[in-house]
Image 1 (tube, rainbow, N blue to C red):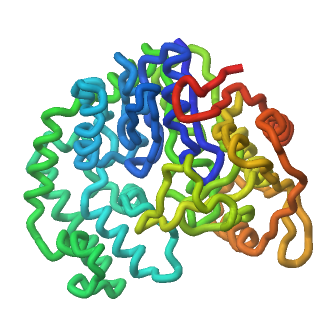
Image 2 (image 1 turned 120 degrees about the horizontal axis):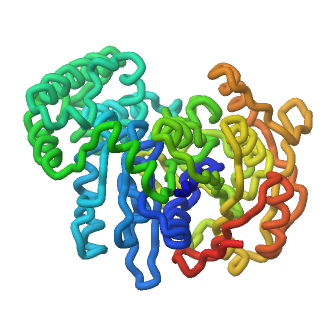
Length: 440
């Protein structure tokens, strides 16, 4: 058996969906394992026949007959939004996709109260917003650390009494937290009315009933069964978000509460007793992108104001989708963080088709800091030191890019990135469909 771990190197999902689909087809994978993150993923897959789907909690290989999904114990799981996704995807595939979808019974549940609290807290931060996706990821991860006894696990969904008691405890505590921060539930703006209503309505029966209904359809499996799935299948491990948003290596506080390196995937492979070949693939674009707040040294607001190839749009929570030129300093930093956790075997470079609509793409190979100093490397630390990470953040907010040159063709971009990252670009993408992918 073989396993391939795919992770984004930048500030976002880096179009991992189409790369996962391509890898499943090329290597005959039969299982996609989601090893981090939650429903904030937006992994778009476009087929040649025009069918497409943006995958969130279903593995991005699900268009391929027989490919299963495993939501691992590291995945933060939202059963209610999974139901919406299942209905959307089932229309595209012509079959009910939940039959091939497995969830580890230990996976933590994101409740509607986590998502609502997340959104209201972000609103209360005003101009100091972190740039949250508004899905409740951080709120759930926080509870895992500070209130683990109140976290609902997927295996609890089959016990309505326990689920209801935990939901009541979560609702009450989150309500108290928000009131202590000065939240006025009756005075929130219109887009937060539904979030406020969850705390103004004391009953949790609607959520309890929704969980009971979907739990009857879920394939909830015990740890031994999850290990067997990983051990007995050719797998693609699908991450969510990029290394530059990692909870410990990203630029705090504009990060995710999730480990976005390959660490969790390797842990799952180890505990399953997997003995086969493992390939780790980092995904990046020919240019930089970022959602929401946070440092983005090479951002160029005039770069591609109306980029017809981008499906990302402005979000009420994450704000506008930002674009900029290729940043080799940030990418080298991401690769150092990845290699500290294991190996990096290859790069998947996407959006090589950008050269069809743009004559040249600048690339940054250094920064000029506010004090005039010039640097070409960001120094990572591995002590879980958020004070250090925030210092990096503050430095990057005032840094200016030093552009080393331009690339005018895809081949030039490949050469520049391969040399900068000391890794072969084995997977190359010239468009959204499986036919636009090349494996060298």
